[in-house]
Length: 129
Image (cartoon, one colour):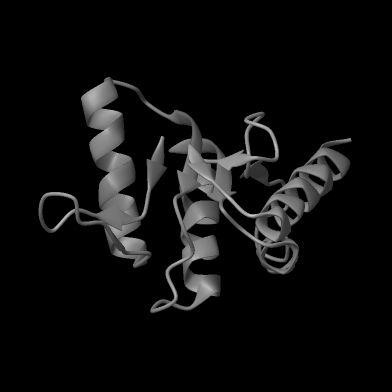
């Protein structure tokens, strides 16, 4: 399950990394899925309007409360992963998720972005060992 986006209108997506919004999304997912916990809850994007630490702390709180087993990040840089790791000891990453270097979340990306995505995937694999 992913969260951190609002949809104010058709075809519109706005990042929202406020901890209270993320909590409402986790609780909504649990209710819709009729689950006691989520295996993985990923932040769609880091919201530039909300301090990163607050977003990462929310993911950790969900994990500590047993609402999620793993907190994760999507479309992040190596630097963002390192900053998140200061708050989240174990981190499940979603970067390219096996789609190859030419695509990221279904979109064609340039070579520099592909290299960055692969670097994050490599980093995630190294963390997991």
